[in-house]
Image 1 (cartoon, rainbow, N blue to C red):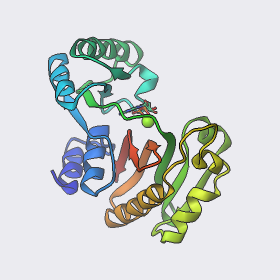
Image 2: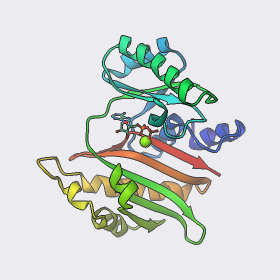
Image 3: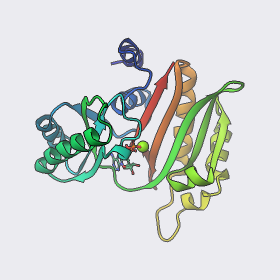
Length: 230
Ligand code: ADP
Ligand code: MG
């Protein structure tokens, strides 16, 4: 399905927020590296999808009503077998029903467990004055509490991307601390430039979050994605 088709389908269903699966489809289409995710409606289907994908896998709730999947018990990591996948499917349904009873559940997204990397986040939001603005920061507490992020107005020049990844206070983390691999800065810069081009080409996209992106010494990949359209 093309980007326009995915967006049209969401709109025809009265939704402006694309699911993780839809968001990743659209991003992959644009050449942006994501861990692809498949929708499974039943535990049986999820077990099959997991076997196709190869273990270990991750299961995540797919619901138009759930914004933060882990907050409602909607994410299970590192599942090693079909039996674990089936059990995780039922556990997630039970957890979500308990914590958010009104949430409509479409099923689970099944995806490969990505190898660990440095967690960064990349986002786009629209400023009333400047239009689309890209944001880059480290994942987790550093971003939420310290607001340690860099912003640039779209379209980005290569120089903007270079500066963004280097100007955050947490930059030494990207260089590698305590024996951890450094992040592939060129891959992060490329991701920022690809996203800039992507949002410029699709003005109907109001908001975009890749949270987190895993940065490796060789490449980077988004493990979660969320796109909001007008
Ligand atoms: P949400 O942000 O909606 O709670 P995420 O999809 O971001 O859910 O998953 C929560 C956390 O689980 C992520 O921050 C990441 O650390 C981990 N995670 C998610 N997907 C994967 C994956 N495919 N491989 C490895 N870790 C993952
Ligand atoms: Mg997330």
